[in-house]
Length: 100
Image 1 (tube, rainbow, N blue to C red):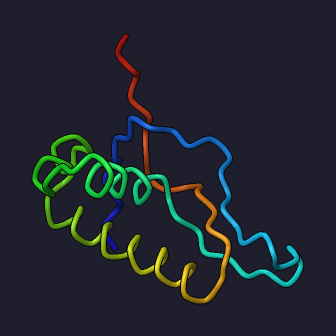
Image 2: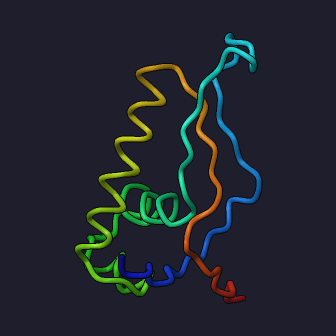
């Protein structure tokens, strides 16, 4: 298997976990959203960039962004529909410096 290319992200979420309030933690299943999935969703869905622009910002091929977004959207939908927590962690990423 080919090694993953490093994805560049500008937004580091820190320790973030989103979970339903009414369900006890011990009964709650979860999904893991990687930093690159989080960044791709942020740039594409929140900031409104096209996949080509997202791919340039993250320094990967456009088809890779398409796969990352597909995976992220499935995980988010699974968490919302099946009442699961969403943890944001891990991934093959480097955080870029924020400009002042």
